[in-house]
Length: 172
Image (cartoon, rainbow, N blue to C red):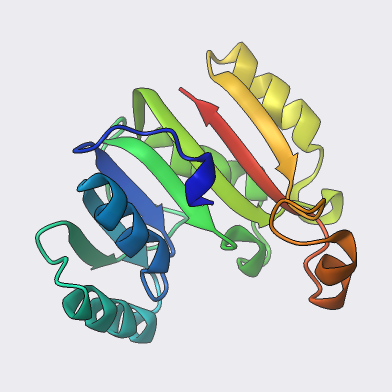
């Protein structure tokens, strides 16, 4: 995930469903950026805070309990938005609308890197969604299948029940 982020040091980041803050910690160490790490699960936030403390990154990472379906941030607040395997866990909700909620808080010129199980049964037609984003002014929008030896082999993905593992990346 981090390898696909093209980003400048010092910018503001939102990680949706930060869990144990692994991605936030790596971003803070690499880019010295300000990160708002959110998760709905209070226990995950407690573990995440312990990991932030262990890595002495409290100056860079702030954790907040928040719902991915209704982010408590103003439009265009962040230079980067990211999430890793989140939205497929939210049942009964339109995943493309969830993505749009995440992209709502992205600044013009900001980048997004979202990794999830984007199968058609979960997300609908992502090619049409990409076209919609492009029509709305987003640039460099791509879907990258991560089961083709980018993160894992197709065989590993099937064994781990990660079929449809895909990166959605682009720029607003």
